[in-house]
Image (cartoon, rainbow, N blue to C red):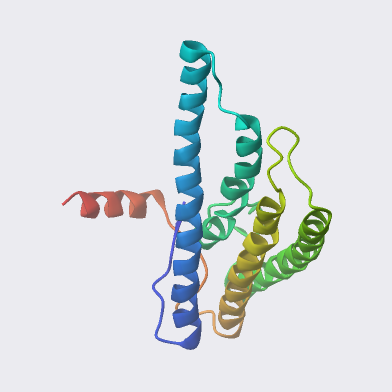
Length: 198
C-alpha cells in the first residue's frame, strides 16, 4: 500500500497538487462510466428478458466505453503507487542507490509511454480520417481511441513529476519526498484507519 506524501510549497509540490486534481477528475469520469454501464447492462437484461426488446447497439456502447475505465484512471493509480511493481532489488537498496534505481525505472517508463502516445495518436487520427465506426450501431470510434493518447499523456506528466521527485532525492536523500508515492507499513495503515474512524 502507498500514500501520497505531503506536497511542499515548492514549484514541484504545487504542480503535483494541480496535476493530482486533473488525475482525480479523470478517475471520477472513469468511475461514472462504470456506474452508467452497470445500469445499461441491467436495462439490457430486463429489456431482453421481459419485453424481448434489447437495447440497440448495446455491445457497441460497451466496446467504446472500455477505453474510459481502462485508461482514464491510469495516471491516478500511478500517483497513488497502486500499480504492481517488481521491488525485489529496490527493497535491498537504500539511500541514493534506491532513488537512482527509481530514476532509471521511471526513465524507461517515460520512454515507453511516449512511444504509446505517439502510436495511440496515430491510431486515433487514422480512425478519425477514415470515419471508422462500430459494426452494429455504426457509432464513431475515434472519441474512444482519442482517450488512449490523452490518458497516456497525463500518465507521462505524472511520471515526469515523479522523475523530478526522485532526482531531488538522489541529490539529497534526506529531503522530504514530494511528487512520489510513499510506501506505508501495515502499522501506519492501521493508525490511519483508527484516526479516520474518530
